[in-house]
Length: 61
Length: 331
Image 1 (cartoon, helix red, strand yellow):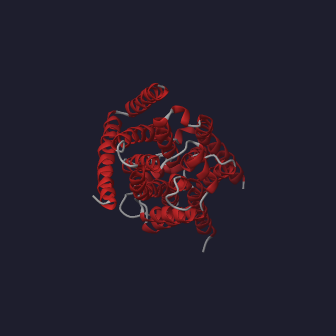
Image 2 (image 1 turned 135 degrees about the vertical axis):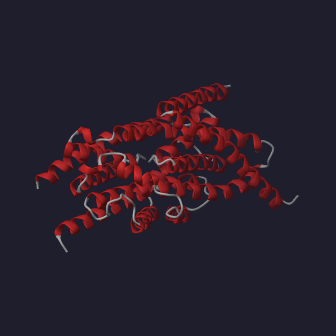
Image 3 (image 1 turned 90 degrees about the vertical axis):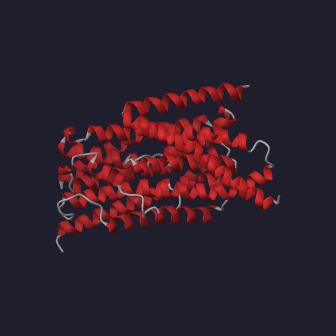
């Protein structure tokens, strides 16, 4: 496979992966926002902090 | 032409000036990652961002403009003096933070200015608490959403590219970053220009120049987007350096993850009518991709300075706006 074709395929796959990651995140934010401002606030802050904690543990090793 | 109309035209010009400064101050964030990863030169990147700032005028609605116009303070108390004071408060704070290279939010400066001037004019009862609470909550929510989305995307990309040759990955992300920067500039253009549109529209509405129903005229939409795009063209290189280089070191894949995540978060907020800080959102995204390497890869001192400036913005701009209102009202 030529380098150009490989890059084109990877570009498409990457765009699909980005959509597959970002769409559920925003959908979750929308659901939380519909449930109430306090839910989206608590949900995003707590998940963000948990994520930061997990990253800290993983990247320290 | 009567003096009142001349005064309104002057305030519209000041509002567009604020939008221009917003472009100058905030839009640099649109190009920070693309410049720091050397996908485009600073000049090319600024033209790229300005073009997409303007393109954002078409087809993305005016939900944020409606929130600013009708959802922050009661329209009944808004007059020329309140809007002028709000703009002076916001512009003053923007210039101070630009001078110190702090990427604070022009949006929150404007909202703080509007609240401060309205309270100075008619007391605290005129503040629409549900609207201000929602905007206030998103000061914190939007960078967290940018952070979460960027972390998840960066981790997925790490896994996807684990066995891809670095030169191939480099080629892919250089192209994709052009798209993510364009998407971010569209998000920035629409969310931020709509704040100016909201201010101009509520001024025209409250002074009887817009008929019986609040709406945003097309000339306001186009002029607000032209002003922010013009500001972007002149760029704020000082802030580009803070965002793109001082928070963490960026690779093209990191730039793509940060920009794509931030663009998605900003466009989402725009569709649900929430004015968010585009600066805060991309800062969250950049910190997110930096954290996937090592938390120590993020220069937390710079990040903390930025956070402190965020929380000062609304009180500081509200204070300047209130003082300006007292001075203007005395005349």
